[in-house]
Length: 272
Image 1 (spheres, rainbow, N blue to C red):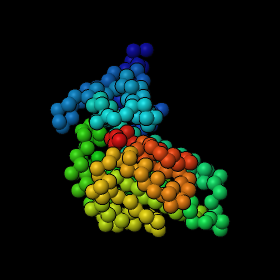
Image 2: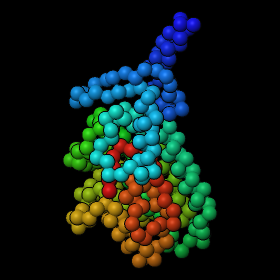
Image 3: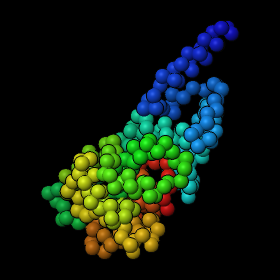
Image 4: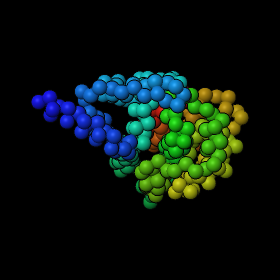
């Protein structure tokens, strides 16, 4: 019995080492194994092990539910967990389910291309909604464990190399082909416009109606207020905002409230 137990644990550890982050899934985590302590490059020790899986998954889910707000960094003991999730097939699957839900909702709207009057609108955020910032976090190795360095992050955005978020090009063009006017509303600064446009086109997006970025006046507002003001402006022009999609809750907060919202997973950072 003892030999069998030792052999089982040994095989379990070997299997864990073979599984890549890409194949990570909360349902595949082993239970009953002792945690291991590792030290990151910045000298911070973090405890990895099944006893933390429940805590870290609960923390991540409650971020998505907007129960946990205004956090500046991911808890150090959960940075590895967030990294595994955001680079896994589970993340891709979760985005795909959100896309499926949006397409199902589109089928229930009154906007069809041959019937549209040109005033049906849909709003997308950009970062981690249309364009993925995961390559940035990979190259910097922090995945939320350190406060976002705005200067370095904007420099990375200016390179225009962000890939499309999985399945989002498909949804973008599904909405566009149904006759909706697409508005891109981002907290990116105005000076990044050229890089942003080129990056979006390179990633497969095109034919949006307007790209709204923050100028000097908008930078004085919170991101939540800025995005709410854009919805107010669109509504004042007579647009019917059928849906808003973003990876941060600031995309939906404030009035006017859109008919439907779709939140994509992102527990790396929080922007109010």
